[in-house]
Length: 435
Figure 1 (cartoon, rainbow, N blue to C red):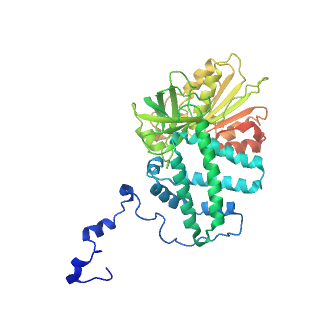
Figure 2 (spheres, rainbow, N blue to C red):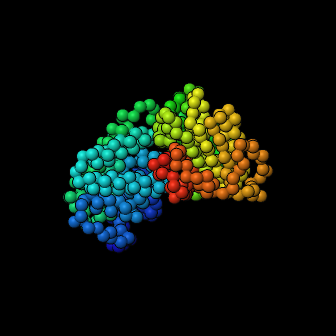
Figure 3 (cartoon, one colour):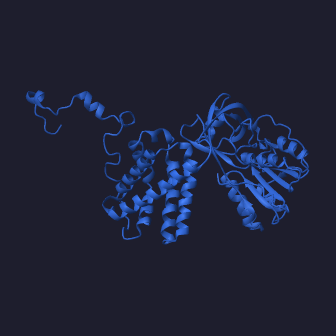
């Protein structure tokens, strides 16, 4: 220590610490004992340059978009309320980046509204909708308060000396309005915030796909084509959107199709680790995929890539309840023929549904050697076509007279929608849910 009193006076130094205490002081005990210091204390790597003369809502947006915000905000959240340690996954970065995207949109839209009440109400409605989805987190008013405190301390830290009363007042007002709307949305939503479900069967039709069948503790009333928020034991704190492959039913039976996506936060551990008897948590259904049954019927084009077949199969199964249906032409594609794992079920549906035609598509003619034994695929009305989904679909024309429903990976969605619009399909005819 700097001012060592010397050995003769060591016992008289009331502030002297032992070697054991020095060692403990070097260990990060925050996860066990809570914060001892300001979690945001310490100098920034480099000062952020902001123009405080601009609109305060946009200044706050710029602070949110600073690349250091997610990491520093995560530390502040975990320190201000221990509950947030359990709510967030081990790597909270992706979740917090989504928060930044939503908050930035709200701030920008409010600033651009220039006081227009209808536009401001659109932002508030967005927050209410988000609050309904966040019921699954079971947030209390204290959680909202602590979240706001962590947000304020993080933005003040990033702004440094540029922070002033104007920014503080704007942030306080904006957060109070949005937080109130979030809580209103959670209170207005009906039904349980969470529903438990037990895995009763697991199929692995390919090396990287798991078909998981569950029975929920109580029936979940979702519309065909919607998705559910799902929490599993394989990646704690990670909620994912999964689309049921069968309609809601009184028995609580639900089926999900999950592909192992390289680098995914959940899919790999789920596909490899799911077993019968595991307990999952399911939350509020969302999504807008549907077949327009307005008469006169307009024919339907469905395009599914990989596990994107799940919500479309759910729609088809629901349509079988009706005596009359629009004609449906389904293109079901994958990289290799053997990955068309749900084709037998689709062929069975088509065998009893004269309004349904199934067109298999594969980018490659043969399965790779590492795929294992090849299974004979059922014969369909149409022979399997080679090529990407968008190429095969657009070979048949623009489909401009159809309602088009697309489901698959983000890359597949982008390529298919862009390709169809370029081929002449009206964009307003195409619907899909963003993963």
